[in-house]
Amino acid sequence: MSYLIYPAATAVVLGVLVFVHEFGHYAVAKLCGVRVEVFSLGFGKRLLGFTRGDTDYRISLLPIGGYVKMAGENPMESRTGDPGEFMSHPRWQRFLIAIAGPAMNIVLAIGVFTGVYMSHFERPAYVEQPVDIGSVLPDSAGARAGILSGDRIIQVMDISNPTWDQFAPKIMMNPDQPVDVTVQRGSQIIHTTLTPEATGKERIGDAGLLPVNPVLVDRADAGLPAYNGGIRPGDRILSINSTTVHNMQDLIDSLQAAKNNPTAVKVLRGGKEMTFTVTPELADADQSGEKRYRIGITRDEIKQVDKLPFQAAVYRAYSECKTNSILIFELVGKMIRGKVSPRQVSGPIMIGKISGDAARQKGWVPLLIVMAIISLNLAVFNLLPIPILDGGLMLMLLIESVMRRDIKQEIKERVYQAAFVFLILFAVVVIYNDVAKTLPGLS
Image 1: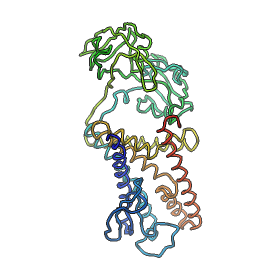
Image 2: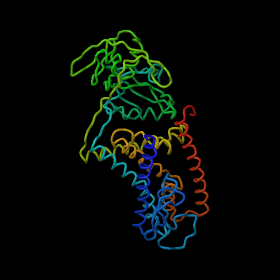
Image 3: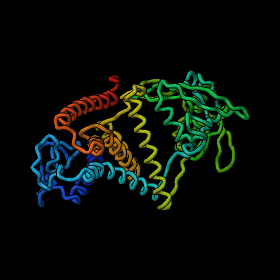
Image 4: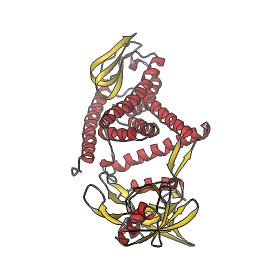
């Protein structure tokens, strides 16, 4: 039954986002006096609905979007001069109708983030801290750039004194591209360049730099080495055989070095340091059958939880949406220039997986955050200057306003035909990416 969560969560997320987007177009069209003929959730054959006034409100067969059909909306149709037609209205009104959909998605994202930040704003504690390097993976981009454990990155590209929340996107968005960084090592300032490696199915950049993110014991399994040695939930692991543990990777590496020998594990419990002797055991690390030494704990993460007042929550939500929007436009620009892989773009299949994974977590907050992020992505995508999309219509209206006359009908027809073919090809690529990232080995 748990697998039913995925289609249910997808239907809820996409249903809300599509309704909000189309309602934006619908509401402004009504205010401007444009006759709305159809308000549909989904495409294809009409399944059910009702008619009120001039509008048929319906749910259609294919639940992958929705649309609002306005009278005289299609520029390739001949005009009748009816004052209720879309093309009979001034350009500024048509522009407002076009931008209303993406605007509503942005408002939804800000509203959801605001509600989340006011009720339960939780995130890993390290993400808003300076970029202090806990460990550097061997033979990684960071290692080749000469970065060491204990260094602090005080400049990455155009950002001074970045936090991990600011540093990580710069690395992820620049696979196989040189990134200028400035490192502080004690009193020494070092300028270097690192080239993040394209990794994973999405080919995102990875520098192999891990934060100082202390290991808290969430669970110690009875009968396994940690529990038998005296380690209990709530303990913070400080060191293994006198080697400081900055993060989970340090713990794993130290255990592999210790093998099955008695190992001194220092922990912090209730403000006191305590040392236990634990003997790691060899066990399967994952489904691949790879074996790794372990002590039988599940880690927890130090998190910061706040309840922001309304004004602070709105400002934080606005800042979050602004930052993410800039990143999306940057990603699109880099993709056009061939500097990032199209695999970073996800479509309906991955949206379903992400939504389902969020719905399976405790509480509503994870699913609401996913909904806000997807809503923002939907808004930005629709603002791209591609004909058929809202952004394309807005661009044409701006061009016509500058020219003070309509673009020729034949030109519009060719532009819309080319845009339609482009969007079909784009949809094929996106769906293929989703399938490739879902099926093992295909990517």
